[in-house]
Amino acid sequence: MLSSLIIGGGISGAALLHYLAEAGDDVMLLEKGERLGGVIGSYRNEAGALVETGPNSTQTSNPDFLHLVASLGLLDQMVEADPLARNRYILRGGKLHPVPMSPPAFLRSSLFSASAKLRLLREPFVGPAPADSAQEESVAEFVRRRIGMEFLEYAINPFVSGVYAGRPERLSLRHAFPKLHALEQQYGSLIRGAIRGGRARRQAAKRGQVPRDRAKLVSFREGMGVIPAAIEARWGRQIRLGAQVDRLERQADGSWLAASGGDIFRAQRVILATDAGTAAGLLEPHHAPAAQSLRGIEYPPVAVAVSTYRRADIRHPLDGFGMLIPEVENRKILGVIFSSTLFPQRAPQGMVTLTTFLGGARQPEVALLGQDRLRQLVFGEHAALLGAAAPPRTFNLSVWPRGIPQYNVGYGGVLRAIEAAAKDLPGLHLVGNYHGGVSVADCVKSARALAATLLAHTTNPNR
Image (cartoon, rainbow, N blue to C red; front, side, top):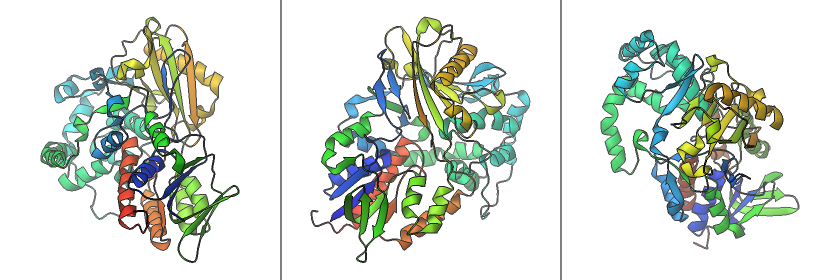
């Protein structure tokens, strides 16, 4: 009998496998696909440009990600973003405006009107929401209340689409952006919190936590896919690919059986590291309320289009991280990462690579238009917004029908259901980007924390 059985080989499951196996746990991972990593994948296309099928980078704002990279021997492959990545653009009135990164730049910025700037100065005098309120406030409600409609439309809306491919009207402030919620509750104001938070950031740095405003944006020479590939290479004998679990059975002695085709796996504990919908299907016979809550998590489709152009064919200087598109601008894309500016080695000499995101909760139908229509659509947007004078030399498309999980209003009920399932079903655990954060670093952090908990309670005789 196994000590641990992990179902699902995205970054959460893969990182959990690494931590458990490294500690000597008798663990097996079952993945229905043909590789680990889930949406994370990297390859070179026919032009020699690096294509990312999902996340392009992550931040070093917590030590867990760097710990994983070091333990896999990948530190020498890690690369930091070019300093130009500090520049970011937001579309307004059909033109790209630099995002102001300092108070003087904000005062000079053409992105926001004079009335919006004055409205921001009133923010410290807006009262906080009741601390004991059981009602979840949406991100949009919070922003309108504290800093006004213009900031919602031209700052928060595009930012939310960049993180969640979501809509601020649906997302829960306290769960999607817990630090903003905490700033208001602790300091009564976002501005006061930002000023007074310096001491807390210094204390966090002493604990090894890098403040988000000082965190480095990183990837790898051959892309984010090197992480799951390294885990697969190291622990391959403890991984079964092409193994879809059909059902789970709880045994009288508290152990678990997992059926995958004609194979049966028995373990003291089972960890569901799948998306929420798949986890719900396996949980249904054992905990219907938790399964129902998990099924309620929205996963809008997202398309990731990687276009390689001749540098001479793009008029814009591409001098930044990329651009975000507010919903009120009525475009068909969510945003574009200037990938070969962010990490210059991603495109061949004389070429540039742009990664465009489409669909999400804003326009889910766009993500599913198909290769030919999306190629035309993306080029049209690049021509209009970046001055693309000729079609891309290569176009690589990844479509994720179930993209990023949305921490929508009411998400607190999902967390309570997960806690109830863990309490009622000893030996069953859940991990994934639908709780604990959606970024790569968040998933690694959750996996490492769960590994520590499991190892502290293991009865594996091999340890």
